[in-house]
Image (cartoon, rainbow over all chains, first blue to last red; front, side, top):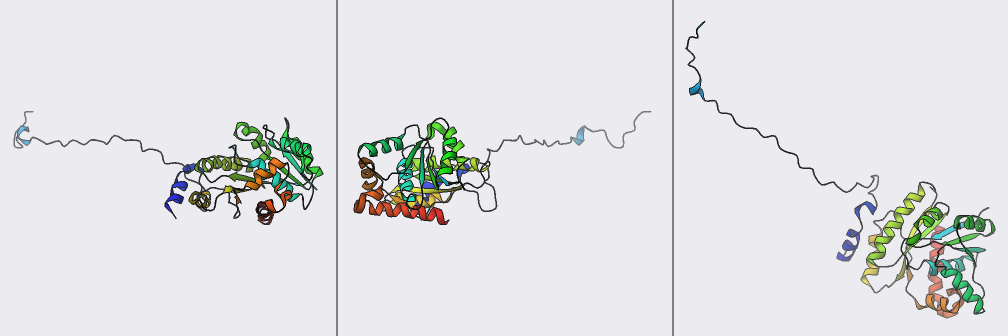
Length: 59
Length: 213
């Protein structure tokens, strides 16, 4: 196909072009909707602040 | 049996609908009676017929004014003629064109070899698709009109048109002075003799392809 043919064909609105055989014309793709990414924060356990494992807790 | 109804439709003006309608009607008239319905408010065909009469011309098909209800005129014409050719209005009157497309058997969509016409004919193709919901037997073709074989754009049109939902006739009608001369003389290209021979041959090819496919 020549560049001129390519250009002419491309100038037709996608929704007005013939659907490929056996498939309905796909609607123009919608712009992706941005989705907020779930943020995961690393939590560092400060073991020094924890009570000693051998500590005896009062009753 | 009702006559075969063929419409010339385009939602864009200036693509040669009226000229093609008259000459197709003249070509069809050689194999049966033809009623030519002018549903274009510009009334070019009625003017052509009046001009022919005043110029003493003969042999043009009977031109019927579509008036306020072109569908009724078409139905009546189909009772009386073997063929009915309908010149549809241009874009300003889409409602009428859509009503006509629901009633006709075949529709030819003339398209000039230019991007503007390509885009406009894509709209007409959409109107044909809509009409088929009410008239599933409607057969449609695109017809490249006023083609210039030496122009790259003319040659590229066929490929671009193949991406639309309606097939394109393999024959095309070239840009020829004979079509304008015929209008000026109040006749069809068939009555121009040698001056109209090539133009008439192209119109014959259109009729033959539409009847064959």
